Image: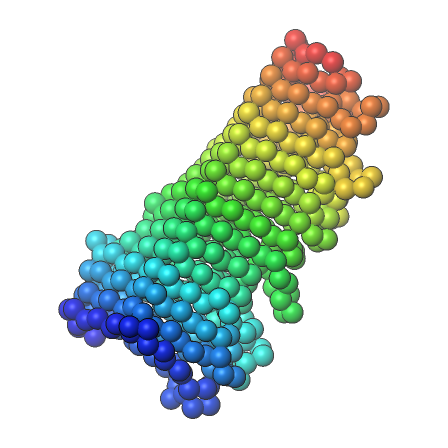
Length: 426
């Protein structure tokens, strides 16, 4: 493109795209303002409404890549993107020192699943809300709104640049409402909701973090009340290296199995701090640290897990910890169970886990150890069943240590070896 300074100012202008059959495809764009291989330098683009309320319309409004800086503001798309073409926006910075700002980009009517569009043979799933997967600089998304896109809301997990998502609402997007990666990326003050199940039945994860080296998540509210399988609230993927997630709330409700925070086996270190999880699905783990030989530490602090869940699929624990070298401190797990089902507080299958000042309440066993050299101290373990012990040690457990705890009804030891238990109270 080779432009240096260019601006487009709508001043409340409305653009009405043609329908699919009148597009001069296969480009399907209104504005193409720089590419990764041929970027512009500086761009401003603001103040346009796109009216695609007519049938079989929907087009990429803007695709841009620059070296220095771009600013895109106050773009509102009216009507569902039902043409089966590319989603409304693509952004990128090709220079590591460049910066882009996307503010108040709104597409509240989403996109139609690809199989139902006139371009079904050339699309899969359907449009992405905003795509930003070839970024080397800093991209900020401020107070945006993306609802109902079948192939991700904001998809920004490619490239080595920094992604910042500040404010905004992301609802009912397929694959994930936010799919974020990059280096030292940040997600702050965001609302994510899933309250509608699409007819095509694909998963709708809340926040998916991948291809990243350091991501900070602060004050994000996630509500998933129309769960399907694979609708985790937070997915920490194998390619996530370093996560800090704090001051967040997660609400899970519905009649399907679903999980809250899922840490994949090869993900790097993560700190989960000051998070409230209400989990009321038919089964699943509020926190699932998947089985792994990875010793990168997962640290869980000041977390409150509550709600009445079921046990479908065998997922019956408030926390499943299958990784070595994890740490938990100053937190509460309350698992009364839905109806008459038996829920456990925490299941540990890994090694060298340390728990300090935890409170575990469960309809079955509050604390279960199947691993090696796991320690719990200054904690409370109470079963709702007066006939059950507060802690259970399986025969596979070796060298467990329990000290300075309140363990109501004591320990159910099924043959653990080298047990160290002292200064515990009933």
